[in-house]
Amino acid sequence: MSSLQSLDRLSLNQITINRWSVREAAEGCARAGVPSIALWRDKVSAAGLAESRRIVDAHGLQVSSLCRGGMFPAATAAERQLRIDDNRRAVEEAAALGTDVLVLVCGPAPDRDIAGARSMVEEGIAKVADYAKSCGVKLGIEPLHPMYAAERSVVNTLKQANQIARQFPADQVGVIVDVFHVWWDPELYEEIRGAAGRILGFHVSDWIVPTPDMLLGRGMMGDGVIDIRSIRHAVEATGYQGPIEVEIFNQAIWNQPGDDVLATMQARYLEHV
Amino acid sequence: MSSLQSLDRLSLNQITINRWSVREAAEGCARAGVPSIALWRDKVSAAGLAESRRIVDAHGLQVSSLCRGGMFPAATAAERQLRIDDNRRAVEEAAALGTDVLVLVCGPAPDRDIAGARSMVEEGIAKVADYAKSCGVKLGIEPLHPMYAAERSVVNTLKQANQIARQFPADQVGVIVDVFHVWWDPELYEEIRGAAGRILGFHVSDWIVPTPDMLLGRGMMGDGVIDIRSIRHAVEATGYQGPIEVEIFNQAIWNQPGDDVLATMQARYLEHV
Image 1 (tube, one colour):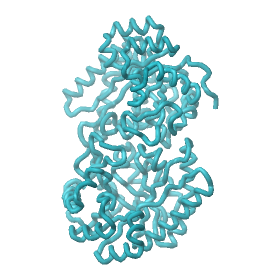
Image 2 (cartoon, one colour):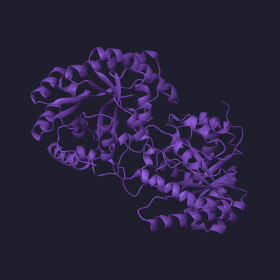
Image 3 (cartoon, one colour):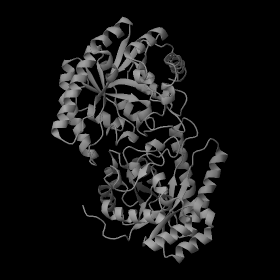
Image 4 (cartoon, helix red, strand yellow):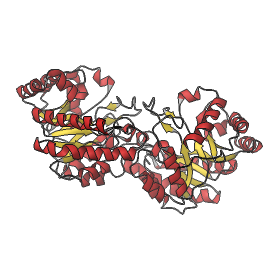
């Protein structure tokens, strides 16, 4: 299996260097020669939406995705409507930032009824998809690792994400493949093939052993047990040639100088992705 | 859905009160009226195998299972053979303790090849199953939560466990359903139905939010988000009427007096299981 020969498809997911503002991240990417960036809504909000767009444009960056919409399940219809309204705003923000991908972290159940919450996710996506299309934005369902089922998302396998996505036209709803969330899945390669034509993003990091923390314990590529390259080849075999985001939640990495993280990330990308 | 009306099927998995020796656990169960106990090999070893059997018999306890065999994948054939030898000893210990169920925690991969490790699990079970049958012991494959895929087991869904078990006669290899490991699975109920005739154990605890620790963060039944009763009913609908083990890895519970834990466990069992 061949390594990547350039950094053309590399994108910094902003969470990887969490201390940086939109401006600092854009400047860092420009300095390092990272061509794309994935933005987070809280940081875009802090910088201002229009100003964020000006910043990324001024530094010649592509925006690979906006993180994140989703969080659909809620105990009451009124609260669920608020979530849908928020997703519409997220769609508008994605469009304003010049990206056509809004990443969905679908949300946990408000109670013990996980099947019910999964239905709420489908209903929520159905209520946002047409509007997203009218804005030129696709919804990328990101299955989250089952250890986040109680707190972040009831969509926990790529199979599930594919099943939901297929209820919608392929130009409206797709999936995000993040190796950290799916590497363990016995049906991973089969479901990657099944996602052909709907893969809207590919995220890399690593699973380190021992895992220091459930949320902030992801590793830099090469530091863990995930066969990242095999997964990339499977994703590319479906035809996906889009951005590859490095998305790492890790306190130790957050504590490092951002430019150092970028340099490590670039080297590891070529070596391990 | 109806609650349990008696404690007849309740079993204390010894890890729930980790500070207790075999003797202390047996005395505690006898005091509290818990009819069964699941033993751990390290504690049996500390007490002595024959003495452990005498202790549980003297207190009128059934041994619901022995924890644990497994850990099959290893980098070399020699090391894999050592693991198989150890599993044969575990089988002998189970028989000596008077239980017909050896729980298998199948083990992590020695490298980045998780599919290869899964094959090693199947090979390992194949090399132990006949011997286990000759000893009157069944092998119970316990799928572990995907967050343990890198460190404890590459068998991470009930579907996987069922697929492995079906390669063997039903009187040799079955599965263990532990709500903590499988509650998140979108295919859980389908796979419980698929396990009919092969369910060798049912384990309960809860998934608490926020989760304090990946290993020691399980909760007492009722303190978390798992719909334990629905899962029990599904397990019973397959015909399973065997022991229900309370298996909780939780530092805060380990810090409590054992008799208090037993009392809480009994009340929560009737209320939430």
